Length: 187
Image 1 (cartoon, rainbow, N blue to C red):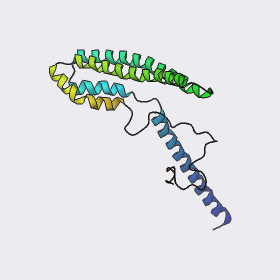
Image 2 (image 1 turned 45 degrees about the horizontal axis):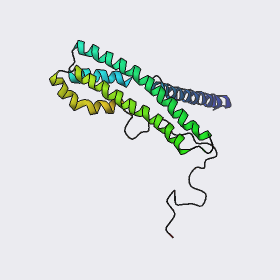
Image 3 (image 1 turned 60 degrees about the horizontal axis):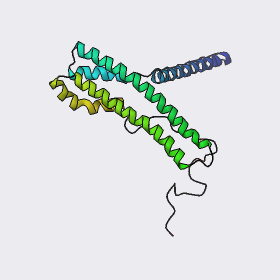
Image 4 (image 1 turned 90 degrees about the horizontal axis):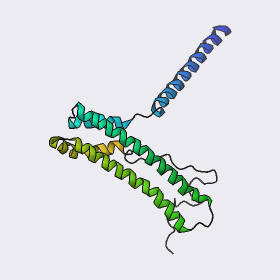
């Protein structure tokens, strides 16, 4: 083989590898975009699930959709208030020598919205149950726990991202400490 033929072969192999790398990266990027794109609305899945499982007619389905939309509007407001209360609570970290009573008051304010979320959801499903006839109510009672799992956070997974770790925080136990966070041995 001549020098030019050998280099031509390597150039083709090199271009082929670059093309494959670009295609692989593009595929990963597109798949990630689909996963992190606009989230699917699981609640509309809940409406479809309830309609199918309970055998709702068209009138019941329309009422269910209205209830769902009203519930979502109320929940958006409560979630916003909850975020604001939690932000105010954790903003207290910036203050020095803060009284425990102030901390407890801010924590209760934040917890109030968690409770409000539960009450709104309870009343929403009471209204949904009231749409049902007697046969549908029995079925509703048997599937409500499944519905609540559908709308809640995934089992075993935290709701939000992990807390931000600053650069000043060490990774793991102090040097030379192989106890991995165990309490000190008894004296």
